[in-house]
Image (cartoon, rainbow, N blue to C red; front, side, top):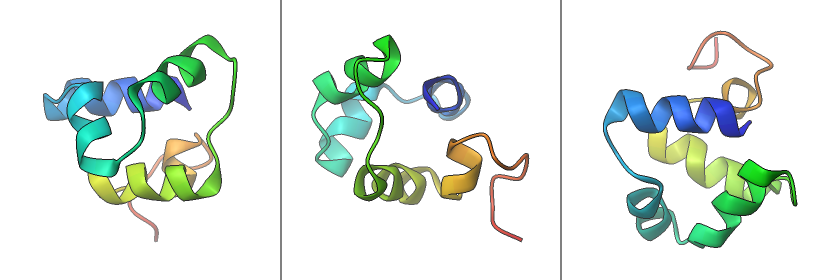
Length: 69
């Protein structure tokens, strides 16, 4: 999941800090996901998906399409 999140950050030209501020998800949470110390919960996945305008399935790598079909 973090790889797709990082790709979206780069494509959209935003930082994890900006996403953190906009979604209310602590920056340390992103670090934990990146290192594998934790996995995202459904509510946080939804906030990130909404922020980027993509589906949760896309974030999780279960779909190649950013939007739900």
